[in-house]
Image (cartoon, rainbow, N blue to C red; front, side, top):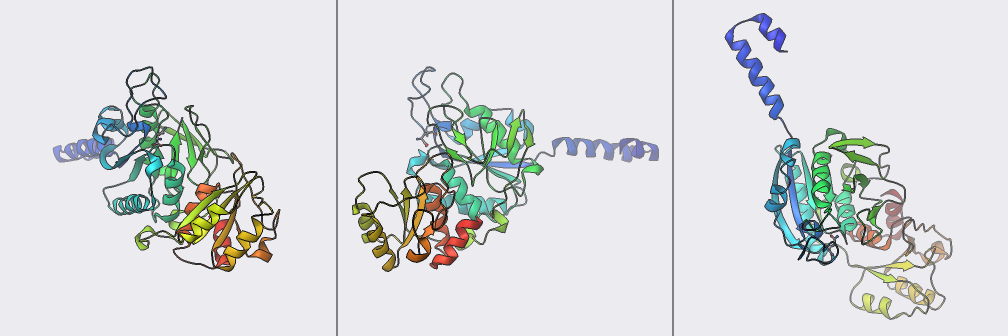
Length: 356
Ligand SMILES: NC(=O)CC[C@H](N)C(=O)O
């Protein structure tokens, strides 16, 4: 471009060329970091405190200031949405965060959003956003396992990778992503699998790729419906359905199921043993609750790859129950809570569990 302009000669052309070059050099994408708390905003008493510290202490502007390298990859600004441990997320906070993400992504001056988040329920928020945000712009959810005050803290690099991922054109249209420990995961699959190590997040079907020194290396892409291909849209959701999880174990009793339904639960996620199996004394209870209109959704408490199929272990067709397929119980709760804003038909709900 410059030689062409120079050949045409004249001072104006040279000035235009220089202006174009400097605009191109500065044309970094705009990323908004929505901070919600967690260990990535944590602070400990000493640098040796990698595991005992207080989460949700450091404000978003301090997080950004601590990584000046962010400004090399994007124009970054922050908003403090919450300052909480992610165990204190609830449906109202999910909706508030989702609506803010959706509003930001509609702006022409926003190219992507990074959400800093505690790791305990990170996979639930990320999957929720994956279902309801109608945008191809990247949304990257990131946390850390050590507070910024600790030796070998992982937050800075995780944040740098998350921002460089969020500003990448090749991250568009891949649904909500989780970037931790140099890996890129789809929000659909990823789950916190270890609670003390920096390699805390795993996807049973593998990560989508790696991010190394701000460059993405992709190996696969999500095939399930998400974001712009989803039938759910945060802009049309004002309240999530009441869905509760009951954990399966030996010596099960019926009290938790009945208590939740008595309190208005529209669906119960049965976090069953193995294949989502149901103890013989619980089967008639779940049949009775289904008869009252409550949806019964069988999932597995198995970590790292639960997989529940219809009519395996229990006759789901006969009982009109639903299976959660490969979703862990907490993600099954999110999907059911979103899906039941649109339908209370069990066949439709089962279709949704296969498709998303
Ligand atoms: N590593 C973490 O982020 C855990 C801290 C806290 N329990 C949270 O989820 O926010």
